[in-house]
Amino acid sequence: MIPRYSRPEMVAIWSPETKFRIWFEIEAHACDAQAALGVIPKEAAAAVWARGAFEVERIDAIEAEVKHDVIAFLTNLAEHVGDEARFVHQGMTSSDVLDTCLSVQLARASDILLGDLDALLAALKRRAFEHKFTPTIGRSHGIHAEPVTFGFKLAQAYAEFARCRERLVAARAEIATCAISGAVGTFANIDPAVEAHVAAQMGLTIEPISTQVIPRDRHAMYFATLGVIASSVERLATEVRHLQRTEVLEAEEYFSPGQKGSSAMPHKRNPVLTENLTGLARLVRSAVVPALENVALWHERDISHSSVERGIAPDATITLDFALVRLTGVIDKLLIYPERMAKNMNRMGGLIHSQRVLLALTQAGMSREDSYRLVQKNAMRVWESDGMLQLRDLLGEDAQVSALLTPAELDGLFTLEHHFARIDAIFARVFG
Image (cartoon, rainbow, N blue to C red; front, side, top):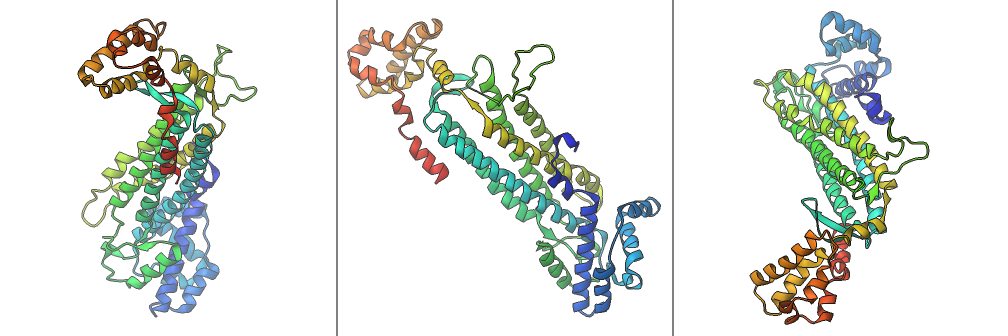
């Protein structure tokens, strides 16, 4: 991933130095377990820890000749360890190192992403309570529906990202497995106790059956989870983009002093951050289908998945990390305009209260079909007047309505308080 959309902590997980350090720890912990079993001398295991070292440039140079990354690493490691290096990698295969390392990296990446989600949830909660009872219009199909509050909108986003967090916790647990089972996964040349020891030392669980590689359904689920989180990022980003449209302008991204919106039009304040988040979400989701296709490997293993994961693992985690942090900043600094919300909500002549009138007429004895027809007839007059007429006035002049509802009862149907009566209950459900 390009530096523009990267954060150093996540990038560091995928650096060659980090990867080879994890490889070294896997091999060294395996040596400890082998020594405890009496398979190799304890002095050899101690020598690996004492003299073990590597150089990225040297590994790259060896790989250019041998065309095998793990052999290149082991060769460079042996240059430092000396004769005892012959006991390293006993009974193991390359995938034991590669797959276990990837599990460690994805688990560490998950921990960063979980921290990102926690920060986003905190921002959403703070702004939701800040605007718990700020009236705004709810829209369906992009059309005015009924009143909600802006805090209600943010509470919905909070609940969605809370679910995302739960899914990521589960995906992390599923991906964080260790395989040290040897060629084709049968443990023919290595004791399962070695796997158990390495797993414990690396913060992983053991893979029940690895068939030389860790089954890729785990990885497919992991990247699918990242894709779902990315879609939730896009959903909230799209909401902000719509709310910032000139015709709406109920909320907008913070526009910093000195910021420029257009090279040609000095008046522009564009939703560039949320547009960027929409694009980043597409990048994260692009990892999902390749991860799903990686599940179908040949027999006990092939490496068709390898080139894919070398790309999607760093790219998806780095991009999502950046996106979550950026979205948190958007929410934290979001400019919110209650006056514009009220103006927009009132511009259609009270049509947003039509359902309350419909229900009141049915309660007063009119059939639902007749009630709907009566309210719609008057509502269409308001609609076609572009809000110049008022639904309350037209209904008050309608003899059929007046026969069932008093003026005071009609007035009571055109208030906002009714719509917000259960906001507290909803917040209790979401926030506890």
